[in-house]
Image 1: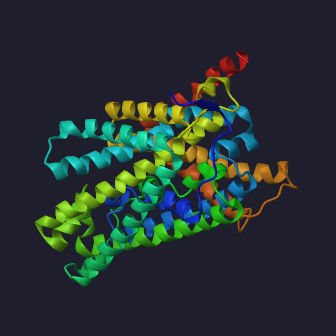
Image 2: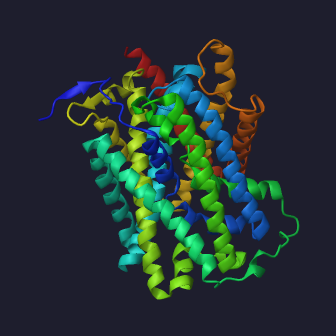
Image 3: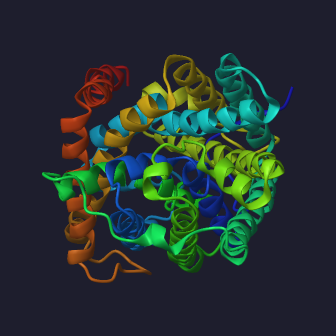
Length: 440
């Protein structure tokens, strides 16, 4: 049996291309092939639909700039957990680790696995009963790959990410070159009378920003990254910019090929696009491409998610079980296994839409906490070396903080049941924290 070592055995093996591949591989998952239908339902107007996607990209760039400051100031594995601990203390960071294991990270993995299995069932002609088993099997398989080693995980991620970029570029290019669309689809359509555009935008931004979600993923493995001062900011800002261009391009193609009303009814819009461009064979082609894309997203999230649990194991007795790194593979294997098992449980419990809003409100609550932490850390550690400082401070983090607050409030209003359960699980960590501290 392989020797098991204590914490501190993680190795620096990630470089710029690996860091960008983690971001691109996770962000460009399945959302761009699934979420446009959700957005079109909230914003049945081409100009507002495109504006919402552009706005999502702008917010992601602002967030990336903020995270570049945090990651280069605190270059440790754990990402948000580390920043929350340094700014708000051990209770808040514990609650983040608690909810990450139970909902945020595992829910995100489960959501993408759902879409992967939907397309897989469609490709193989399987009945819907196979959707959940396929999702669980995929999570367990990729968890094994990432336990095997970070080098193996990053190599797989690099290959998959390169394939994703080329795929989206090809779809955008072919979509216009073949000329099978209609420019009239871009004609402005007024929103229904009495619509509150701010509420509709906020609701549309929940799935959009879920689709953009992952632009900060490389910060969870900062402690395993070479030349952090250069690599992390370049990867964050470059990755977010590239993804924004690709996503907006894809939505322009969707609108060129279909009117916005039809898009709202196309949950598997990627298949419909390729069917129009390439005939019946195109449906199978795009299903393969979506499977490849989802495969990379799940792999990337599994790679980074275990690092949060591992980082928290340094501070809290409850997570001490995860304070182990595999002696041979140098990976936090226990944390990866537990994340995989909880993700599998969430898949058996919920559906794609349930998981999307169940996890979304908590994600944006903690995004807001991290952004607020920038102000606290500037005052708390005025002499700390900050190799990268966010441009536009204090306005930049303040804008992102306001966005987070708006999304949390709007989601709580329109999805009270999911929001209640999400926050109930979060607050359940408070007594657990104090009981855990007593065991010291």
